[in-house]
Structure formats: structure tokens, C-alpha cells
Length: 427
View 1: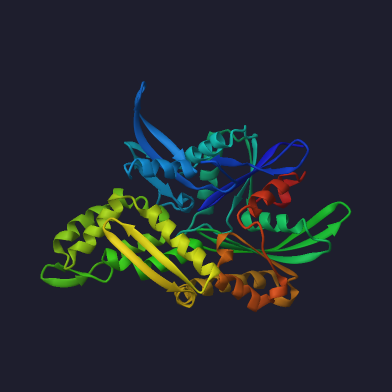
View 2: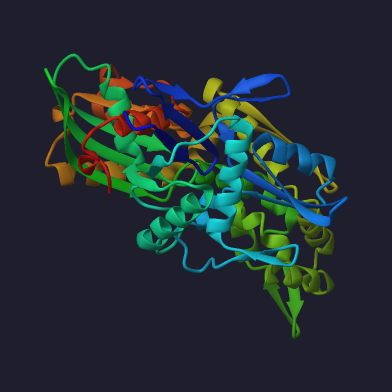
């Protein structure tokens, strides 16, 4: 058995699994603050420090990055959701302490930290998941693949296989099958929602796999987050206000607030032209205090604090008919009760896009809903009741299954890694 690792590098979390010498799959475990976990937060923190070697840049990832961010009082570069840059030709690099880092540098730094905190040697063979459709406008799949491989080789991987994330989840789910079945897998990540229709046949030699359709859309958990921020937070930072320009009263451009829809761009905004324009806008704004609050928010690098507040609210709304949004930072204090029905109305456009993508998958497979035997929902946003209800209404609640939402892809990747013929699975 070739030793390999299954790597689910996610927008929000990253999970790694290993195939050991006996062919069994095991999760890579981590421990922080006395707490064990498998899902490693996909965040980075760069900070400067002095030691006996002089001044150098320190790199932290996962919960250790969050600790460093808190301890430094925001005097660092905290980066989250950077997977969203993978397929963007517009993102070339970012300047961090006078050093330009490309996407592959960010990913390599992150994976090195994952390996260090895992405390185990990684094998030379990796099966890495990838979305069916990468996030962002006009995503370049070839570019994303090249960037992934460059980062993986920096870390030390020599044999690299790419597998669609929903296919990995499907293979994980198929381990429980006792009979042939046609399965629709819906994988809801932070940046993308991906769908695969696959046919599994159960035989004496194991599972036979036939892919029928793969579709994806750049809409997922981050887009749901943005709806809360846009409706509840953005106005405190100047959305809807006006400014004076050459004797005319004009609205503050919405482009500044669209950054809230992309955590990765928000974490870069303090070093952008937008930040300088906002500084100039204070002078001409008819409501300068709100623009100052926006700048103070960026100076505090408070994107992660807002992310936590939004995530807490979404979790409440997944379990109850209302949730409390509480956000206090940079002089802005927001307390708001959000009804689940209200939230579902906000995310209706995203739900429609997801529904259209499912329709496309069925059309590509040449199947109707009645010909789908099982539907497996995985990923964080599968907890959102409106998402699950959409699939129950379409396929029937008796066909819907969930479980291991945060680790199913990584386990599936490692299970696929045991296969002798990877060509059936790799893309």
C-alpha cells in the first residue's frame, strides 16, 4: 500500500487524513488549548518579531494564527478565505512586510504550519480535493491547478492527484451502500457549492464508479454571511450615505461594501487603494463618522471578529426561529435579533442559484428527481435549514442523508488514495 494523504483544503477549514500501511484511513488530529480537533481553520497570521537572529517574520496558522492576532492587538497581517484567490488571474501577490507573496507562497506557508502542528511526517503522495467550479469572477481552473501543485511541491509532495470534492464525498458515502445506487452529492463549502451525480455498483471486487454529472457555482457560506453583513452591519460603516464632489451630492460607492462578501479581499483591504480613497472620502462625506468607523474597523483588522459574530448568528438560526447578532468593535456597537424567516428571505437569490445548479446537474446526467436514489448533503452550509428544505422538497425527505459534514471529503480522498487505478477518479 502506497502511503498517501487526503487533503481537503477548504475556504473555511482544512482537514487531512492519512492512509496507513494497513490501508486504513485515519484523521490527522490537532490539539490547541487542551482541545482536540480535526478541522484546522484555514487562516494565516504574519507578524514581525525580534530574536537573537534579528528581526524576522513569524507565520502562524489555524487557532495559533488567531491567538497571535489577538495577542498582537491586530498589529499583524491576518488572512482568511485565501482559497478564493486560487483561480483569480487578478490576484498576483500581496505585500507582507516588504516581501511579495503569491498564492502558492500563502498556501505553502499554511500547509507547513498544518504539518508542524500535526506532529507527523507527511508522505510524498497526496490526493487533494478541488471544487468543480472555483470561486470568483472568471475563475481559471488551469491557473488554480498550477498554483496548488507549486505549493504542494514546495511542501515536499512529489505525487499529486486532484479529485473533485463532491466525488470524494460521494465515495465516502458509498462505503455504506449495500446495493447499487445513483447518488447526488451536494457539497456546500465556504466559497463554492458543488454537485456530482454518480452511479455506484456494488460487486465482489468492491465499488464500481460511473460519473454522470459535475456542476458547481461560486455561491456558498460566504455569500450567506454577506447577506447578514449587508443588511445589518454595512450601514454603520457608511453604506447608503452621501458625499459632496464638485458641488454635487453623490452616493458613497457600493463597491467598498461589496468587499464584505469576500473575506479574503476584506483581509487585504487595509493595504489597498480603497483604503486610501476612504481616507480621502472622510473630508467630503456628509456622514464622516461612519466612514471613520469603517477605517477604524479596517485598522483593527476586525474582519475575523465580524466573521465570528456572523457564524454565531447563523448557528443560532440553524437551531431556532431567531438568532441574536452581537458585534462590538471600533466604536460600532450592534445588537440585532434576526428572524430565520428574515434571513431566508435575504439568501433567496443564493438559494435560487443553488437550485439552478442542481437542475443543471440532473439535466447533464439525463435523470429526473425520481431516478436519484440517495442525496448526500455535506459541508457547513448543509446545516442551514432552508438549504436542506430545498432538497427535501425536491427529492423527498426520505432520500436525504447527512453526516460528518466537515470531514467527509477528506476521508473520501484518502479512500480513493487506496485505489490502484487513480485515473478513474483524478481530474
